[in-house]
Image (tube, rainbow, N blue to C red; front, side):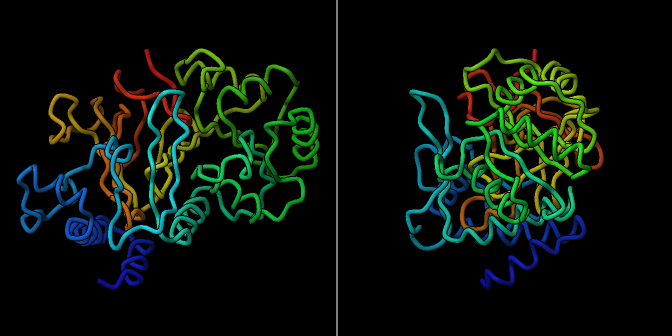
Length: 330
C-alpha cells in the first residue's frame, strides 16, 4: 500500500462515497498490519472482505490503548502521546511514527473551522509544552501558537494576572483572539477578573481535574459566558487516542472534519449502531490514525444529529475521568 497516496486521499475527501472508500482501504490495511486490531476483529469472527460500508467496520474498545501497543505497520519507534488520567489510573498510550501526519490533520481542521492561524492571538490556560511534551492537546496548541506568529501568543496557566491584562488589551485593540483553556482554569479566570470581550473566542477543552465539582455543560457555559462577556462558548473534542478533533462553535453541537465521523452504538449491544437523536456510546472513525487504529469505541456517551453533528452527554459510569473529558450530565 502506498501510504503517501492514502494520506492524500484522506485529506481530499469530499463526499460520503470517498470517505467510505478510504475507510474500507484503511480498515483492511489495519486488519492485516495491526496485531491488536487483527486479533480483535478475528475474535468477533468478522470477515473483512465482506464489509462494504464503514458503519459495519468493528470498533476497537479504547481501553486497549491502556494495556496494548496499538500500532499498524512495523514496530513503533517508541514515541507516543499519553493521557493525563488521574492518580491511580493507567494512562493510555498512542504510539506514532510521524508527527507530520498529526500536524496536517489539526492544522487543516483548524483552518476549516476557524480560518488561518496567523489571524489570531492565541492564549492557552493549559500546562506548557515543556511541562507536558507527551500530551497531544498541548502539542497541537503549542504548534498553533508558533504558527500564529504573534509575540503575545503563549501559555499562561501559571500567570493569569498577565493573561487577564493581555486578553483585555488585545481584545480592545480589535485583534482576533482565541483563548484555549481547561474548564476549571477558565472559571478561575472569569471569576477573578472583569471582562467584556468583543473579539475573543473562548474555547474550553474540558477537565475539572478535581479542582472543582463536575457540572453539566449548560451550567459551565452559562458561567463562562457571563464571566467573559461573550455570547457563545466553543469546545474542542479530541483525545489521546485520536489524531483529529471535532469542534463546537456553540451549544455543545460538534462537527467533524471530512476525514472523521462519529457514530453512536447501543449501550447494551456494542456491535449495533443506533439512529440519530438516541443516546449511546460514541464510536469515532478517524482516518488520520493510519498508523494506529482508525476505528475506536470510546467511553463517552452522546447522540448524533442529521447532517453529521453530534453532542457529548457524559461518560460511562465505570470509565476513568480523563484529563480533558467533558462534563458529566445529570
